[in-house]
Image (cartoon, rainbow, N blue to C red; front, side, top):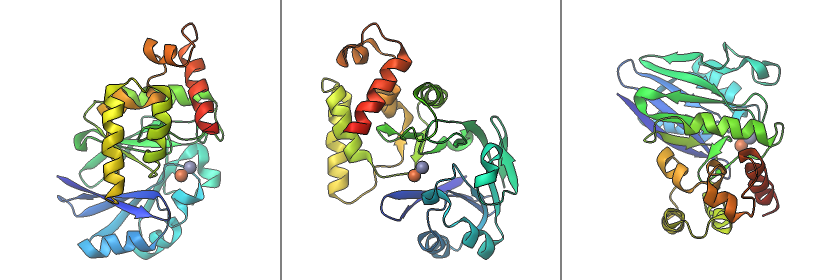
Length: 254
Ligand code: ZN
Ligand code: FE
């Protein structure tokens, strides 16, 4: 059994703690800053054994060195980005396994937002840590990769079991919902989800994590292959990637 804790950090970042009850080990996914993560560990009496890094941006790695030093934690990250990540104890590529106590996560390369972005899928816990690749009702901006790259990354995540919880890196969901409604205002599942998101945010609660099945039904960035979405953006004859690129560039201008 494992326990997951969402830790709000900085303005709108999320870090995640995953605690293995069997061995007492605890892993962290991303370290936007130190204090809230150290507090969340202390409040539960957990010791940090491992830090998993999704990508090199400062709002995901700023706390790594301090948390590593304070806890003697091992750091895992993409070998492709080893030159611009904190020093790695374990350099990872597609299909590699991260083992922490009885927890085992597989590495999925999800380039697009950055070239070396990776996600971590823990099938037994039904969790996937996606940071700035797949997000709640959104996806990360294409800072380094192109639309074809991000679309194929999102395809890999879409193929996971639909009950998987998507632990993404930011609370951008309210704005993402407003944008999604400009693409698919007729999507009943999206309208219902938007209402829930507004209520959740009005109560000051996080909208992350979300269920993959819910993302597949409502997230426009996972839906560019569908005839109704192609029609909605006036691109019935275009390829999936072209439609995805159009939706992504509309979001950039939204
Ligand atoms: Zn980022
Ligand atoms: Fe980020």
